[in-house]
Length: 102
Image 1 (tube, rainbow, N blue to C red):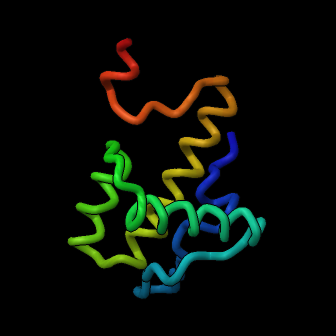
Image 2: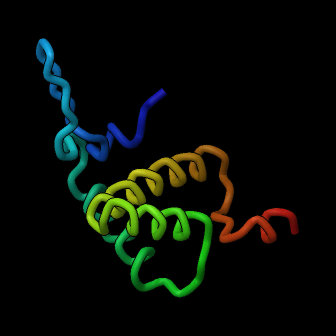
């Protein structure tokens, strides 16, 4: 199974040597254009979209805790995972749980 966060370079770089172990910036491996589009979509979702969904609520809570840029990366990664699941299952995006029940 492909890990889509890592496939698009949206996971932190790891460095481990002896006693040192730290996470750096995102790895930026994979398709740069797709990563750019995911970043744009995450930024728009967090700042411009007035309609609330679980993903936006999670991103806003994250943004208050760790800052806008890191939250934007996290939301972009989660969008990649959601899009993969939608393509695989052939489902539509559900804004809320009420729509999923209907």
